Amino acid sequence: MDLLAFEMRRRAGEETRTLIEALPDILADGTESGSSHFTVPKTLPIDPPDIPMEGRRPIDKVLADDFLTHLPDIADEELEDIQLMLTEAERKVSEQRRSVYEVLEILNAEVARRYREGLADVTAFLDS
Image (cartoon, rainbow, N blue to C red; front, side, top):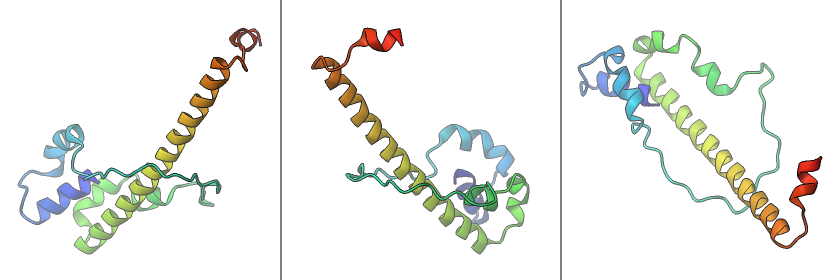
């Protein structure tokens, strides 16, 4: 997303450097994506993930291995579409990550409670 944002700024005349010249700054900064903060969902989805039949994620289909070599040739409208798709993909991944961490916190709290209340024995766990 940072690379696309840079390319869009370059096309708008806001940047004079080439993508290759700016690449170290883009990769080091990491602030271009405008990531938002979301609240952790209170319910956890239990549906299995949607795995494409071809074994590749939808994002991989848009951003092929040679994507950066073709970036200057992509039309502005297509670039905007790709950026919207990446923004949505990033939102979904962040949402899934928050759900995983919420479950991890619940599990850690339950394990701690069991040890605290004497319902679990560390030595039994270590002996197995």
